[in-house]
Amino acid sequence: MSDTIKITQVKSGLDSTRRTRATLVGLGLTKMNKTVIRKDTPEIRGMLNKVLHLVRVEE
Image (tube, rainbow, N blue to C red; front, side, top):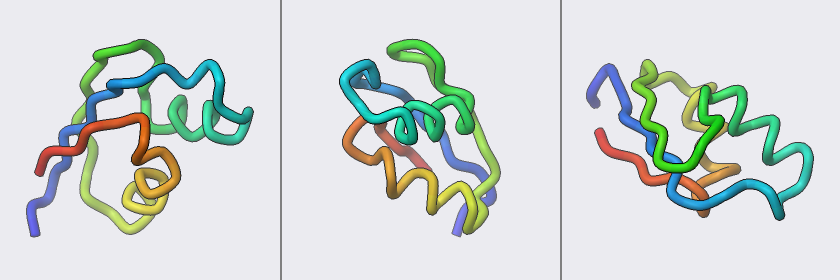
């Protein structure tokens, strides 16, 4: 397993719940097509599972 994950927001979170939008902000995704690199931890994986329909994940 790699030690980093590249996450790109591909869909808007505007029509999502407040909790989903907060998860995106927690991941550091604030705009469309923004890409962030995060450590591959169980906490980040759990956040990704909640917003998988809005992001693209590369390892």
